[in-house]
Image (tube, rainbow, N blue to C red; front, side, top):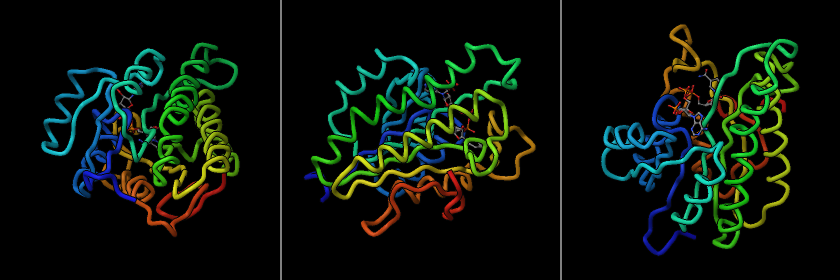
Length: 227
Ligand code: NDP
């Protein structure tokens, strides 16, 4: 069911640049009201202005419980939650500092867990919702958990969270994970072969799924990939 306003609200984390900004833009084009999450308020305002109508910047540091508490208090309605914010700590399992594992878990797991625990019960109550957890092939056990250790392990934890959450929801609430592929952003680097628009495609598809769409899966280019 659509809200009385006829428009649904989407929250995209880490949307001041990169894939998140492309997702925010695409959801505005699809007539969502988009809350553009940015840990830096000025960067968020600038990004929202680059999109124009239909979007509003919200300060949100997903690694900061106070920042999460504030957005939960201030935003009563989130119908679509795109957990996109990400960091890329370098180092293998022996040389990365323990702090890198903790930071990656804060951003890719605990922040996502807190936002899901806050907003998904509302979605179930409303009878409709979509959650997209932006993961990576590096977080796929089936694809070998390649990439830096703190990054891949925290993204694998995000995958497990996606499975657990998907099994816990009811109503037309869909929970899925996406790998955007290798995308030209600050994280992906200039050599990546995908544009941000291409990287956003599967995420936007999952954020706007119809009632008979998939649930509890992990997708790249709209096709299932192994957890
Ligand atoms: P970018 O580095 O370009 O952007 C990352 C975004 O996350 C920025 O907006 C950044 O904010 C934000 N962010 C980081 N930490 C936090 C935090 N604590 N709270 C809020 N926002 C935060 O990365 P991409 O756009 O490439 O990545 C987007 C997602 O896609 C990530 O989850 C990434 O892991 C995933 N991905 C990307 C791939 C690629 O090739 N690019 C491949 C596979 C997965 P700020 O500007 O303040 O730093």
